[in-house]
Image 1 (cartoon, rainbow, N blue to C red):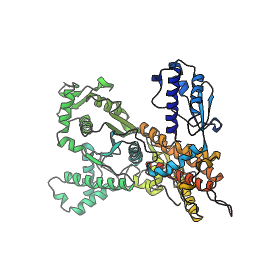
Image 2 (image 1 turned 90 degrees about the vertical axis):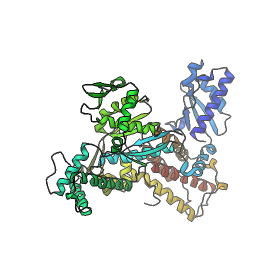
Image 3 (image 1 turned 60 degrees about the vertical axis):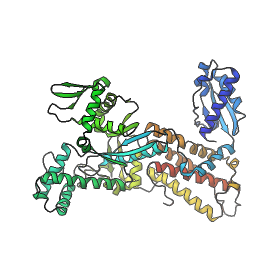
Image 4 (image 1 turned 120 degrees about the vertical axis):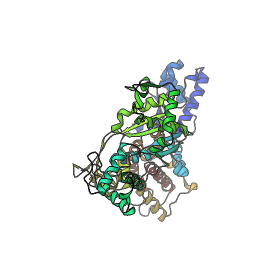
Length: 551
């Protein structure tokens, strides 16, 4: 019996009790929350449904809990029900009902953990979106790991997700990039406001090699801009692909200006009544929706302000049919959140639903107890390639997705490179490898998955109950992580599951010792072992991390 099945059984019993007692069933929730008690002696699951609804139903909580306990006693799979404290209901499943979960997980395989909580939701998830003026730096790498993991979670919850990269190829930063390339080509110093780092000289040299006459073009700076941006963006795409991150859409900022989308956005906002003119400029009245001041959308010189592009981009996403637009921005964009929310409201949308902005805090790298200094190649930042070279893709992705984006994190390169249990990704991946080894060794002695010898009622050991309980939580962890936009919840769950599995492995043998006879208990435990591997592999997959069969 899964937690969801138990929840449904409790709700069915509650409706029956309310009907028998003449209580108003309208106070009952759509679903009943069940949790694993901290103390195993209190049963397999507990619910506070009686405490939640008793007062509104006109009953005493302990009385209502007692009626529910009595009604549940006849439910298949429930062994005992007990009322505790002011009205908590503790439930113990019989071994067969609890053990059946192992077969459910093995049967569902890679689909176990998937839900339909976000079914039919079309979500645009924009992340990384680093300027094409240099390699992806460590802040962008965090968004690559977290963003891709979040996309996987949303898809596992039934949503239709488009991964989008906003390609900033319009504006002053691109001009500075082009000036820097031209200066490098001329062997001149980097402009005062330009980009440093060896990669600038590398790109300039590549352009000159491919286009020997570039310096003789009508506008050398423009030529370096076009070709340099293309080369830089190709490198960004390649490095992200090697990191396991691919985008469905690469949206060019410049297209908003070339296509007339900015003008159309201003017209749309004007139609909604939030545009006014003052001092020769066109303003967006964002203060009506919580912004600290109104924003000029067209400057007095006739040029579009930065927010004009944002407005056009947001409206373009909505026009493409996306119900929810998620933006993942760096810590330096904290003050921008309310501006984007106000912009969505000005467009007639619900800023609490249609637009969601996540802010990621900084990442610090540490080696030998000291901060890792800037990259020579990138000039002022540590790059994705350097992180991957130090600890690998799996460790990089796991380390970056393991913490809430609201936290600044320190990544100890020495720790994450170790092949020991104090390295969190090794600790979890070791379960994947250990479960695979058990499967191989079991096969060698003739123990294989067989429906005819699967006896879930034999899984009575306390370690088996704990492991089954942990495995049963996976779908709810996935759904919760997706709903809250918090992939790190999956990592924390996997580490807890790993600890539970190792304790089970130490006390509950799949393969008999020596000349001991192979029994149905051994055969049934293999199902539990395979179920664990399934959940670990599915969980690691949601983080974009491999589940190795050998380590």
